[in-house]
Image 1 (cartoon, rainbow, N blue to C red):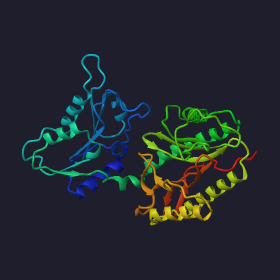
Image 2: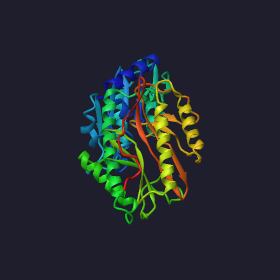
Image 3: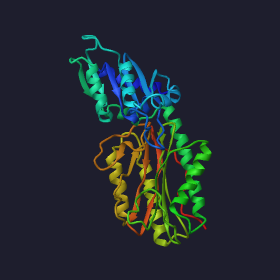
Image 4: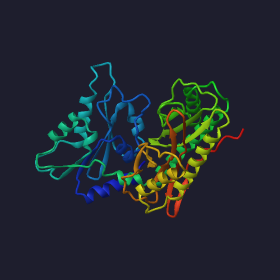
Length: 382
């Protein structure tokens, strides 16, 4: 798994004169190896810290908790695991992780390990940073490599695209379930719709699937987004359902707006404007276009239609992280390249009154865009 990603990273590190490196960002670890720790219940209480990747001599070694070793064994690179849960002695995950890092990095002999050491310091616990300093001779040059691989992550491999397509198929299933549930009319709660969506996705996948992002009724004071609550849906309400699934370490994203009853004319007009804005955004996607220019034009489209401009991004990349480069925001000078997967999500929001957001995923191709999400975003026909 992910051989192409490791080859890209290896070639790049060589051009920068990096002899050894320690990767600690969970996104980098997944991108390099395909291994992704489960996120449903948060960090394991038995883990000593994040999963790590040690790079040396052109080889990437994955360091994981022992309970995750079987899954990590599918990555196609060497794996070192350390003891987590035990009844034979006190839990000491941090100490065992430190020992595993020592085993991966070896015991340096003065003069042998001279060179440049790259470290993703932002995600590295302090105790591991101190340990690494103790392992390396004083003449080793430390280099921060945080963010170095982000441009490579932005352009997807064929392997990554296959996984992303699986994820987008799951969000399509979730949206179909949400649309059907909304047809039952008033009386259900935000959390009821969400539970129906999650059940449909997990039954289709045949496994647990982490699910984000929003399920909010238009009457909320902050109706842009948020977790589903115990809020009952009433006649005349609309519901933004923004879904992202995490399967095989990769995230999808998508959004549609649904209605409890026949949309009012103002609701329908807002929905039609958002749909046209999304179509316009898709038409702008092609290699070479600057991210902030897409953002500017889509925002202006909403303003020209007589609506307040949305306060969030126009879009963003998606992959091992649910939100990554290129971000379609006012400051960003990134240029689109073929192979990028980008979410586009214009919206219109009147806090406490009305809200609509529609979102599709697109693959940047050599001459435009391929739409990867197929969920129904149309107004209901009753």
